[in-house]
Length: 205
Ligand code: SF4
Ligand code: SF4
Image (cartoon, rainbow, N blue to C red; front, top):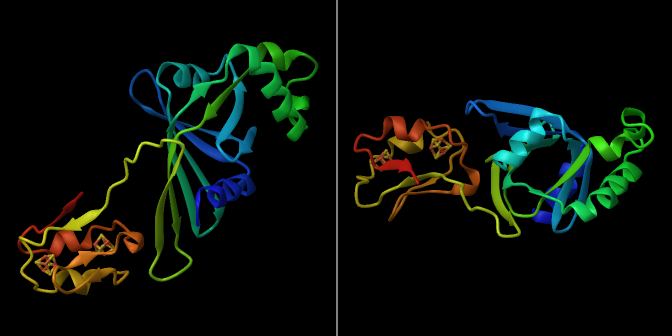
């Protein structure tokens, strides 16, 4: 797996969920399919009058979620950037050319007044597949990204080697030894190991 494969899988998924934060701090989520994919960015279309657009302009943070199959998930954490005004119509027309159904929604020139396009150029990408055992979790960066992912870690100075975490791990992704360690690429983040550790040696890191 790599960044480009993740983008190709998102493109194949078609409709993606875009999560934003509204003015009250509450979560909002929308389905977006009017997206152009390039190796270095995703450019998407929405309408200026939507609350979604206002949230993107005020806050800019977005999480994008796609499921290319029933056992795969790809999530982007990013900040969006409006395309410069001089380039807006070019990008709108490009997206409409790729997705002709948009002409039925915004006939004639209505797209010009209503439409606005944003770009995602820097993102932290998480890929997760439940299709194998252990599961696979990988992180990638588009552009500069934000490197905000976390995982459970075992602090070797606290661990007493009791093996309780090994017994409750559904993915067998904890390696015993010097030191005990969690294989991050296979961890479900279920928290079982944290619950049973008698000395508090496992924390989010
Ligand atoms: S969080 Fe769950 S899957 Fe990950 S190491 Fe702990 S028990 Fe295993
Ligand atoms: S349960 Fe805690 S102390 Fe026991 S082996 Fe796992 S990390 Fe170490």
